[in-house]
Length: 90
View 1 (cartoon, rainbow, N blue to C red):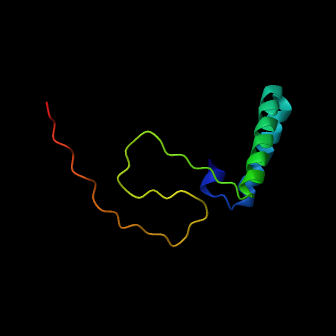
View 2: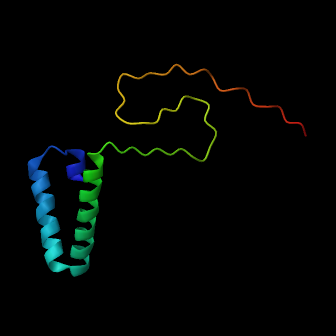
View 3: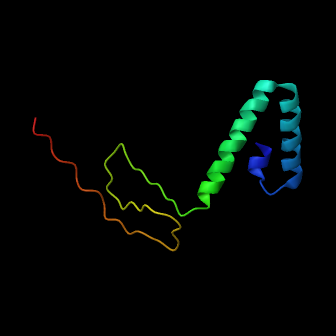
């Protein structure tokens, strides 16, 4: 958590690395899980360097602009207010 608060701190990264190495040396299950996590992280980093983009929106009604894609900059929206709720016909 300390490294997450200050990601640019080499000392904190070294402390985390040491703690993970010690725990891995003492706990085979942890070592296996850490190796699996590391492999998955490498795959995600490799994919992040590609031009692949995946977008998904679900589970609701959207009354404002939704932009999907990759690498946007200098984008602004001036949405209009949502439409009024329909009166009940009960």
